[in-house]
Length: 249
Image (cartoon, rainbow, N blue to C red; front, side, top):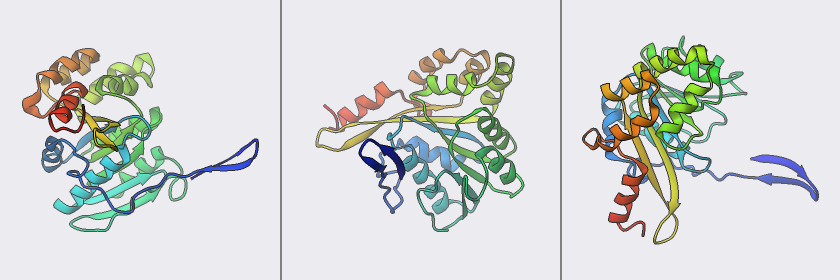
């Protein structure tokens, strides 16, 4: 909820959050993402998209999938807490930024001393939170976080450009070593009403890692287009799949 003053008095904007956790299948998330969660134990996974694109729902569904299928200690750092999790196979602890901890960077630093297997973050908003997320990922934790970016290339550029020019070689090397996947999404009107999600998905390969180290982000799209066997896809391919399914014109 957001309260603010305006000409006629006080107004409020409220966001309705479904109390029931979404499932990856109900969100029509690519099956390769399930395989990723089954096999990865450390590194950074970024879920990106514009406001209202469904990032929080996808992230929640990923955490719930891990909760159902793995015995892990999962720590969420959120601003604010949106979905409430019940322990299943895993133990989940939820902390709210601004209430339980001062800020996301200090929360990640504290989390490294609390022995989590998985750290789920809200949006990475600044240099310090991105740097701490990468440190957590490279020290053996699986880190899931969101960014307010559209598409894989823009995400790579956004992460890099928050750093000074003399740090960008370092951050490119960190990304190449720690990043496991970028899942970017957008919601578009469906044929029968409502909205349907389109997904652009990149998984780290040796070829993509080399391009990231070199800062050649725009060439990543070419490898994604030929990386269908790895589960990668562009928004264009995702749209074609939705049309084939009869969900889009």
